[in-house]
Length: 113
Image 1 (spheres, rainbow, N blue to C red):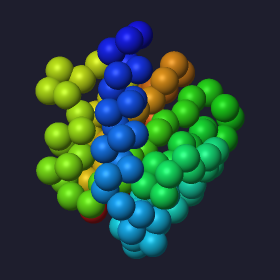
Image 2 (image 1 turned 45 degrees about the vertical axis):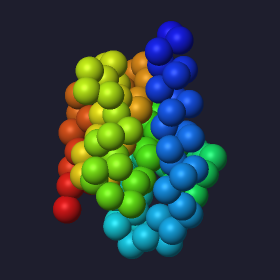
Image 3 (image 1 turned 30 degrees about the vertical axis):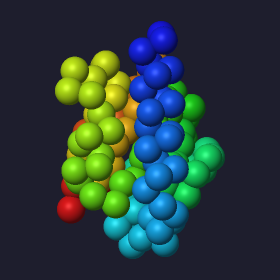
Image 4 (image 1 turned 90 degrees about the vertical axis):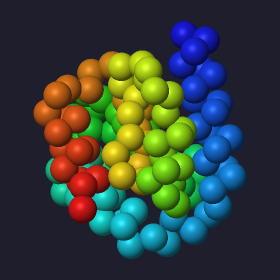
């Protein structure tokens, strides 16, 4: 549990350093629109580059971190990331209990170009 808390702190600190431009980023908007159309709703936005989404039926949530570059997203996630933590393109993500393989496929599809 301490490792997960440490990872969360690292991701939040690194996110704060990457600037607030992603809130206006069309690529971020495209990802969020895709997820919304797939049954996910924005639950909170603790930082302009961090969005927490919840499934419409409440079975799971996912936290997305939007980075300025793919390299930044990749370096934010440890090589041996715990289950439920990963990255794709310039987005790193973390999900909790209840997140299914179908949910993962939806996130992957929406994050892909």
